[in-house]
Length: 273
Image (cartoon, rainbow, N blue to C red; front, side, top):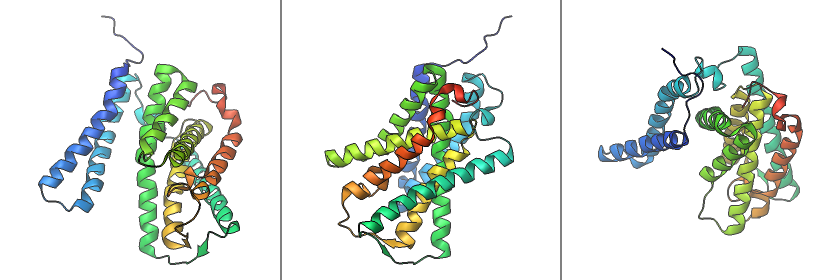
């Protein structure tokens, strides 16, 4: 008997898969609320349930729909340990450089005061926040979504579409129009940078995890434990509570994209989406 081989993908399935993960998140929130769990914990616990569902279902989906017997390698999670560590550190270094650019700009414009108040708890929270958020989101966006869209649309269209969806999902739509547009553009640039980081790392997502997690955790440490930024800091400089949406953040990300010029060409890496 002849068995079909190759990817078995459909648009409706690509849309329904993340929708199902959102349903898990919302369902667990309602369950926790009914059980009387404190409201401050509900979102975090529901997010853990959704991430657990992602980790359980995603390998099976890649095996079946992508026709790949090594899902974690295809998703960019598994790889040579030395290459994984190198990619992770490169991503963290880039995040540190971007944050340093923001700090220099704030200092030069007189919008920054140093008030060190670090402690072990804050550093642990930053590490857990950065690594946890970055791993889950990079597995979903740069691991699954970028890979699946590449199979459906081709690698260049997939790169732009995943970045656009990443921007829309993370944007606060209650902002004034100018701030909203700035945040959308900044997040789009970040999504592109993270996608190109995966290409540059030969398909591994750990460089993107380092960059994403370094920005999240690093900004948490700076804002909560090292510096004081006045409430009246211009939005064009800082963005709406997120430097990615300000001119300095967009400048840094644009420079990073320029440094990634060779990886815009899909022939630069045959192993990455």
